Length: 204
Figure 1 (cartoon, rainbow, N blue to C red):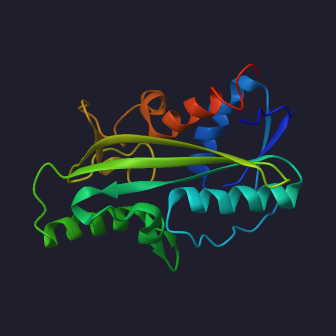
Figure 2: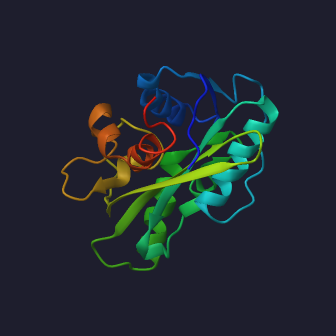
Protein backbone atom coordinates (compact mmCIF):
# COMPACT_ATOMS: atom_id res chain seq x y z
CA UNK A 1 0.00 0.00 0.00
CA UNK A 2 1.37 3.39 -0.99
CA UNK A 3 1.92 5.91 1.79
CA UNK A 4 0.80 9.52 1.52
CA UNK A 5 3.84 11.74 1.96
CA UNK A 6 2.69 15.17 0.80
CA UNK A 7 1.39 18.25 2.54
CA UNK A 8 -1.43 19.13 0.13
CA UNK A 9 -4.46 17.14 -0.89
CA UNK A 10 -7.31 17.93 -3.25
CA UNK A 11 -10.74 16.93 -2.00
CA UNK A 12 -12.62 15.84 -5.12
CA UNK A 13 -16.09 16.95 -4.05
CA UNK A 14 -18.44 19.90 -4.41
CA UNK A 15 -20.77 18.62 -1.66
CA UNK A 16 -20.47 21.01 1.30
CA UNK A 17 -21.60 18.45 3.86
CA UNK A 18 -18.97 15.96 2.72
CA UNK A 19 -16.35 18.69 2.54
CA UNK A 20 -16.94 19.65 6.14
CA UNK A 21 -16.89 16.07 7.43
CA UNK A 22 -13.76 15.03 5.53
CA UNK A 23 -11.88 18.27 6.25
CA UNK A 24 -12.50 17.71 9.98
CA UNK A 25 -11.27 14.13 9.73
CA UNK A 26 -8.10 15.26 7.94
CA UNK A 27 -7.37 18.21 10.24
CA UNK A 28 -5.21 16.28 12.77
CA UNK A 29 -2.72 15.29 10.05
CA UNK A 30 -1.58 18.81 9.22
CA UNK A 31 -2.52 18.40 5.56
CA UNK A 32 -3.69 21.43 3.59
CA UNK A 33 -6.96 20.47 1.95
CA UNK A 34 -8.10 22.23 -1.21
CA UNK A 35 -11.49 21.39 -2.67
CA UNK A 36 -12.10 20.72 -6.34
CA UNK A 37 -14.70 23.50 -6.19
CA UNK A 38 -12.14 26.02 -4.93
CA UNK A 39 -9.86 25.10 -7.85
CA UNK A 40 -12.72 25.67 -10.29
CA UNK A 41 -12.84 22.07 -11.49
CA UNK A 42 -16.03 20.82 -13.06
CA UNK A 43 -17.58 17.67 -11.66
CA UNK A 44 -16.77 14.71 -13.95
CA UNK A 45 -19.66 12.57 -15.12
CA UNK A 46 -20.17 9.58 -12.85
CA UNK A 47 -20.80 6.75 -15.26
CA UNK A 48 -20.13 3.70 -13.08
CA UNK A 49 -22.74 1.62 -11.23
CA UNK A 50 -20.65 1.07 -8.09
CA UNK A 51 -19.45 3.40 -5.33
CA UNK A 52 -15.84 2.34 -6.03
CA UNK A 53 -16.14 3.06 -9.74
CA UNK A 54 -17.52 6.56 -9.24
CA UNK A 55 -15.04 7.35 -6.45
CA UNK A 56 -12.22 6.44 -8.84
CA UNK A 57 -13.57 8.70 -11.59
CA UNK A 58 -13.67 11.71 -9.26
CA UNK A 59 -10.31 11.14 -7.57
CA UNK A 60 -8.36 10.46 -10.77
CA UNK A 61 -9.91 13.48 -12.51
CA UNK A 62 -8.94 15.82 -9.65
CA UNK A 63 -5.44 14.31 -9.33
CA UNK A 64 -4.69 14.72 -13.02
CA UNK A 65 -6.13 18.23 -13.22
CA UNK A 66 -4.28 19.46 -10.12
CA UNK A 67 -1.05 17.45 -10.23
CA UNK A 68 -1.66 16.63 -6.54
CA UNK A 69 -2.96 13.56 -4.73
CA UNK A 70 -6.75 13.67 -4.54
CA UNK A 71 -9.26 12.10 -2.19
CA UNK A 72 -12.81 11.39 -3.30
CA UNK A 73 -15.85 10.00 -1.60
CA UNK A 74 -18.74 8.21 -3.22
CA UNK A 75 -21.50 7.30 -0.87
CA UNK A 76 -25.19 6.72 -0.57
CA UNK A 77 -27.99 4.88 1.15
CA UNK A 78 -28.97 1.37 0.06
CA UNK A 79 -32.38 0.10 1.16
CA UNK A 80 -32.85 -3.65 1.31
CA UNK A 81 -36.56 -3.50 0.50
CA UNK A 82 -35.72 -1.59 -2.70
CA UNK A 83 -33.08 -4.08 -3.85
CA UNK A 84 -30.31 -1.69 -2.79
CA UNK A 85 -31.77 1.49 -4.29
CA UNK A 86 -31.16 4.38 -4.33
CA UNK A 87 -27.54 3.26 -3.77
CA UNK A 88 -25.09 4.90 -6.18
CA UNK A 89 -28.01 6.98 -7.47
CA UNK A 90 -28.77 8.52 -4.05
CA UNK A 91 -27.96 12.04 -5.26
CA UNK A 92 -29.84 11.49 -8.54
CA UNK A 93 -33.05 10.73 -6.64
CA UNK A 94 -32.81 14.24 -5.18
CA UNK A 95 -32.13 16.11 -8.44
CA UNK A 96 -34.56 18.82 -9.55
CA UNK A 97 -34.23 21.66 -12.08
CA UNK A 98 -33.45 23.91 -9.10
CA UNK A 99 -30.87 21.72 -7.38
CA UNK A 100 -31.05 18.78 -4.99
CA UNK A 101 -34.16 18.33 -2.86
CA UNK A 102 -33.53 15.66 -0.24
CA UNK A 103 -36.91 15.95 1.52
CA UNK A 104 -38.40 15.02 -1.85
CA UNK A 105 -35.89 12.17 -2.24
CA UNK A 106 -36.74 10.79 1.21
CA UNK A 107 -40.43 10.89 0.31
CA UNK A 108 -39.60 8.94 -2.88
CA UNK A 109 -37.83 6.27 -0.82
CA UNK A 110 -40.75 5.94 1.58
CA UNK A 111 -43.34 5.89 -1.22
CA UNK A 112 -41.38 3.18 -3.04
CA UNK A 113 -41.28 1.07 0.13
CA UNK A 114 -45.02 1.54 0.62
CA UNK A 115 -45.72 0.62 -3.00
CA UNK A 116 -43.79 -2.62 -2.55
CA UNK A 117 -45.43 -3.19 0.85
CA UNK A 118 -41.94 -3.84 2.22
CA UNK A 119 -42.00 -5.57 5.61
CA UNK A 120 -40.72 -3.98 8.80
CA UNK A 121 -38.05 -3.45 9.88
CA UNK A 122 -37.14 -1.67 6.67
CA UNK A 123 -33.41 -2.24 6.91
CA UNK A 124 -30.86 -0.09 5.11
CA UNK A 125 -27.22 0.86 5.17
CA UNK A 126 -25.10 3.85 4.35
CA UNK A 127 -22.09 2.94 2.22
CA UNK A 128 -18.97 4.99 1.57
CA UNK A 129 -15.97 4.36 -0.64
CA UNK A 130 -12.96 6.64 -0.36
CA UNK A 131 -10.46 6.72 -3.21
CA UNK A 132 -7.03 8.24 -2.76
CA UNK A 133 -5.48 8.77 -6.20
CA UNK A 134 -2.11 10.10 -7.31
CA UNK A 135 -1.36 11.95 -10.58
CA UNK A 136 0.49 8.86 -11.87
CA UNK A 137 -2.84 6.93 -11.81
CA UNK A 138 -2.10 4.82 -8.73
CA UNK A 139 -4.99 4.62 -6.25
CA UNK A 140 -6.06 3.03 -2.98
CA UNK A 141 -9.68 2.24 -2.02
CA UNK A 142 -11.28 2.16 1.45
CA UNK A 143 -14.87 1.08 2.09
CA UNK A 144 -17.07 1.71 5.12
CA UNK A 145 -20.68 0.94 6.06
CA UNK A 146 -23.12 1.62 8.86
CA UNK A 147 -26.31 -0.46 9.13
CA UNK A 148 -29.72 0.58 10.39
CA UNK A 149 -33.31 0.99 9.30
CA UNK A 150 -35.64 3.48 7.68
CA UNK A 151 -38.01 5.51 9.88
CA UNK A 152 -40.95 7.66 8.81
CA UNK A 153 -41.74 10.49 9.23
CA UNK A 154 -38.14 11.65 8.87
CA UNK A 155 -36.75 13.03 12.13
CA UNK A 156 -34.29 15.83 12.81
CA UNK A 157 -32.74 18.74 10.97
CA UNK A 158 -29.07 17.98 11.57
CA UNK A 159 -26.84 16.16 9.10
CA UNK A 160 -27.60 16.21 5.39
CA UNK A 161 -28.98 14.05 2.60
CA UNK A 162 -31.00 11.06 3.82
CA UNK A 163 -29.80 11.38 7.43
CA UNK A 164 -33.23 12.23 8.94
CA UNK A 165 -34.80 8.93 7.83
CA UNK A 166 -31.90 6.65 8.85
CA UNK A 167 -31.81 5.13 12.34
CA UNK A 168 -28.49 3.36 13.00
CA UNK A 169 -28.63 -0.05 14.68
CA UNK A 170 -28.72 0.19 18.48
CA UNK A 171 -29.51 3.93 18.49
CA UNK A 172 -32.62 5.93 19.39
CA UNK A 173 -31.76 9.01 17.32
CA UNK A 174 -31.62 9.25 13.54
CA UNK A 175 -28.54 10.72 11.90
CA UNK A 176 -30.71 13.81 11.43
CA UNK A 177 -31.28 14.13 15.19
CA UNK A 178 -27.81 13.14 16.33
CA UNK A 179 -25.19 15.65 17.38
CA UNK A 180 -22.58 16.09 14.68
CA UNK A 181 -19.71 14.67 16.76
CA UNK A 182 -21.67 11.52 17.62
CA UNK A 183 -22.66 10.87 14.03
CA UNK A 184 -19.10 11.61 12.92
CA UNK A 185 -17.77 8.88 15.21
CA UNK A 186 -20.01 6.10 13.84
CA UNK A 187 -20.74 7.05 10.25
CA UNK A 188 -19.94 5.06 7.12
CA UNK A 189 -17.50 7.81 6.20
CA UNK A 190 -15.73 7.50 9.56
CA UNK A 191 -15.51 3.72 9.07
CA UNK A 192 -13.84 4.16 5.68
CA UNK A 193 -11.64 6.92 7.02
CA UNK A 194 -10.32 4.74 9.85
CA UNK A 195 -9.08 2.32 7.19
CA UNK A 196 -7.48 5.17 5.24
CA UNK A 197 -5.74 6.43 8.39
CA UNK A 198 -4.32 3.01 9.22
CA UNK A 199 -2.98 2.71 5.66
CA UNK A 200 -1.63 5.63 3.60
CA UNK A 201 -1.86 8.14 6.46
CA UNK A 202 -0.31 5.91 9.10
CA UNK A 203 2.69 7.50 10.89
CA UNK A 204 1.90 11.00 9.58
